[in-house]
Length: 68
Image 1: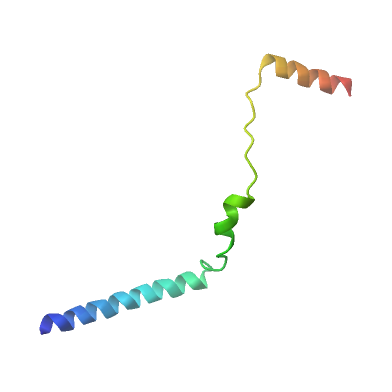
Image 2 (image 1 turned 30 degrees about the vertical axis):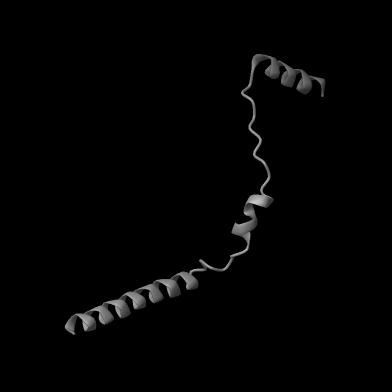
C-alpha cells in the first residue's frame, strides 16, 4: 500500500513539472504561431544554386559591364 502512495506522489510531481514547463513555454511565445510551420514547405521559393564562375562566364560579365 505504501508503494501506491509513492507512485501517486511521483506522478503528481511529474505532472506539476510538465505544467510548469508548459506555462513557461507559453509565456515565451512558443505556441503563438501554429499555422505557418504546417504550410511553410508550400510557400518557400526554390533555392537557386549558382554555377561556379568559369572563365567564359567572367568574360561575358566583363563585356556586359563594359557595354554600359
